[in-house]
Length: 94
Image 1 (cartoon, rainbow, N blue to C red):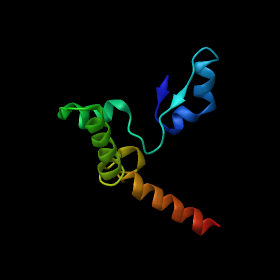
Image 2: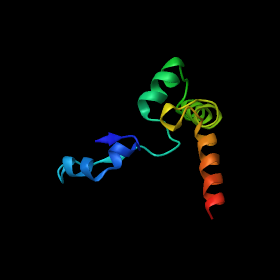
Image 3: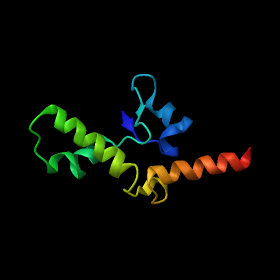
């Protein structure tokens, strides 16, 4: 089962509910789930070559998803803003 990184999916209760037979994987931070990437970007274009598709996806992730697209799971910030805020909080706590 693949989930996002929400607290409910990281809890011991959730892990126990899955048991040992169901493997749990989390999405990687700053990497959109395929469904988001597919719906918001990939399906809107036609690609002539695999290289064009790869370049387009990379540009979408780095130039839009991480820097401009607001994410409700992190307080309607971009991933870059969230990371900067988190890094600043860690610096202040040190």
